[in-house]
Image 1 (cartoon, rainbow, N blue to C red):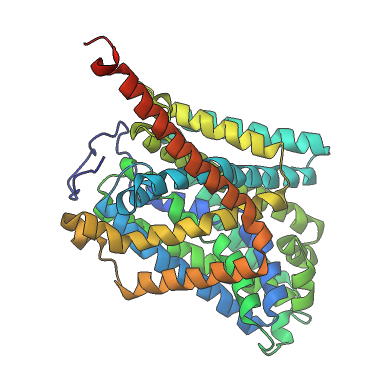
Image 2: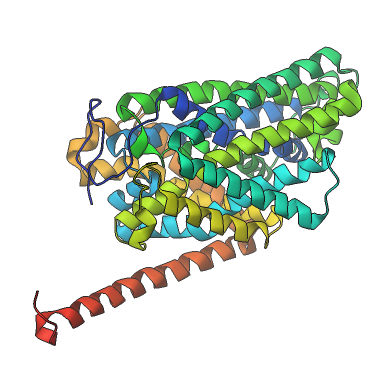
Length: 463
C-alpha cells in the first residue's frame, strides 16, 4: 500500500487512476471555498456571546487562525510526502494502522461527510426563502436537488468542478469585501461596539474553548484539500503555495467582516442575532441589505458545498483501492477520469442526511466527530518519518517539532473540555466508531474464512 516518495517532477502516483490536473490557483480556490462557507454568517454571534468584548473577539479570531495554521503546516508537509488521493485517510493508515485509517473513513462516511453536505445545502435552501415562498418540504427538496446537481457536474469532469469552485470562490470573496465596505461606508457607528468598548473580563477557560471551537469550524478547509492530493501537479511545491495564498485570503476576510459587524452593532445585539450578517447590513442598507446578504450566503454555501462534493469522495475512492471498501467504489470513469461511483455514494449519503436531520444536529455532529481525527492526523508528522525514513525531510514543516506538538496538546485540552462539559454530544460519534471497529474486524474475519474455504487444502479447485 505504501507509495514511493515523490519528487517535484512526479506527475502520476503509482496505484492511482486519477490524473494530476490541479495547480496552485485551483487548490487555493478549493481551500478558500471549503473554509468560507456558512460559519462567518453565524459564528460571530456565538463568539460575541461567549467573550463579550471587542478585544476578546479579535483575539479569538486571530487565535483560531494561528491554531488552524499550526495544524495546516504539518498536514501540508505530510501531504507533500504522501501525495495520494484520500489525503488524511492515507496519513492515518501509514502512521498508525489500516484500522485507524478505516475508522476515519467510516466516521466520515456516516457522520461528518453527510453532515457537512446536508448542513451547507440546507443553509443554501433556507436563504432561498428571501426570494421565493417555500414550505419546509420544499426547502429540503431544494437542498437535495443542489447536492444532486453539483455531484453530476463533478462526475462529468474534474475541470467543470474546478471551474465552478474557482468562480464561486472568487465571487464570494469579492462579495464579502463589498459587504464590509458598504457597512463601513453607510453604517452608523454611534451604537456599535467600537464606540462602547468593554474590557475583556470574566471569560473562563471553558467559554474560551467553546468560542474557539466555533471559530475553528470556519477554518478547517485545510483538511479536505488534502483529499485531492493524487490530482495535484507538483505537490511538493503546489501545496505550500496554495496554503499560503488561501490563508492570506481567509484570515483578512474574517477579520474585516467581523470588524464591520462590530462597527455597526453593539456586542449584546451581535450576541443575540442568529443572522448577524443580515442584522449588520439591514441598518445601513435596509431591505436591500437583507437581500444582498441572503444572496451572499447562498453564494458562499454553494462554493463550500461544491468543494465538499469534489473532495470527500476521494476518501472512499482511496479506501476502495486499498481493498477495505467494495472495489466498485474505486472505479474511475474511462473517459471523464472522475471517481464517479464514489461521487454517487457521497451524494446518496448526503441526501439521507438532508431529509433526516436538522441543521443544529448536523453542525454539532460534524465538529465533535471530526476533531479527534484532525488531532491524530497532525500527529502523523512525527510518526510517518519513523515508518518511512526516506520521507523525513519532506515531513519537517516550519516550526517542527514545536508547532505540531503545540497543536496536538491544544487540541487534547479542547477535546477534554468538551468531553467534561457535554459528554452526551460525543456519544453518537463514539457509537459510530465502535460499530466501525466491529465492521472492520468482522469483514477481515469473513475474508479470511473465504480465503481458507477456497484453498486447495479445503477442497477448492486448484487454478
